[in-house]
Length: 379
Image 1 (cartoon, rainbow, N blue to C red):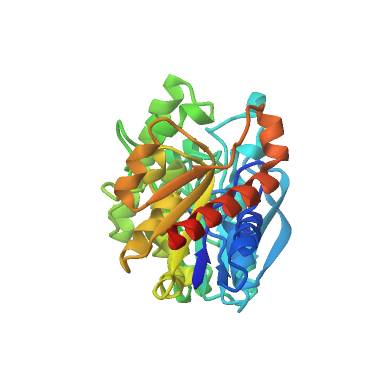
Image 2: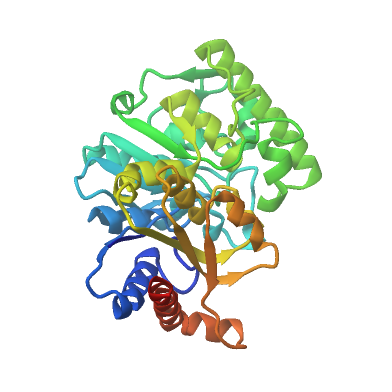
């Protein structure tokens, strides 16, 4: 019997590897001789670095980077075990977590620090980057990022423009001659689970700007600035980011990476499972187990459990999910490959208690699921 365990993390309590470990411990009580394959998984958002580092035997690289407000912040990225791939979470350097609510200024917030992480990874000799772009504090279309990689963004006087999306309205020319040449030889995959365009009613500024502190007037100003930026890119670089699905992700970071780094935008769960070789592992599995902190109707929107299940169903494998909690509308996930879902909550408790008891609850739930399967084989 071969059991593949591929869960996401339980936010605020257990990493994906910890979840997988507890599931294995529970199953081993009933099936001690089974072969267990643990593969921590993430969807390209928070926890992707940790999951992929754990799965590949890599390491986390801590470093200082320029934060959204232009001040140094403590950041990090991951390096795969073979040293060939960097795993970067944009939020680590350019995320809202680095900006207290009272100090949010989306007009000047910069993605420069993300570019610094990319440059540092290039210094390590990587040939591929996987970049998750959720949770950003910026709306600069990746302008700061490309500036950190050497690109000169110039106004009509030939001087560099300042930080932030608002400054893009002053952009008159793009000097690509000093772009880090190593970018051309690096495959860049962007984990992007939204399809919002760069501008317009569904664009970066209108949809995500208010979450980052933009007023109604600032939303209009930022949208115009990004439109000007896109027009200049189209004119000078012959690259159309106006209609790019996902171009508006992370304040336009999707568009910036696509235009300047020739990046590919794909659903995060596809990128991660492909990079980890999950399909090859489930091909001859007896059972696949996945999970996350909460399973509900939103789980079908690019989350780990359904992503793992869809892949497993290509090979007609049964899939079980173990979750911290289940919503009333959880039944929809059965239409997307999850054969059975189980909550680890076994008594009435508050959130703090649930988080503290998470490891034991995952183990016990896994044991009970395994025992049920064992009974079924005897009937």
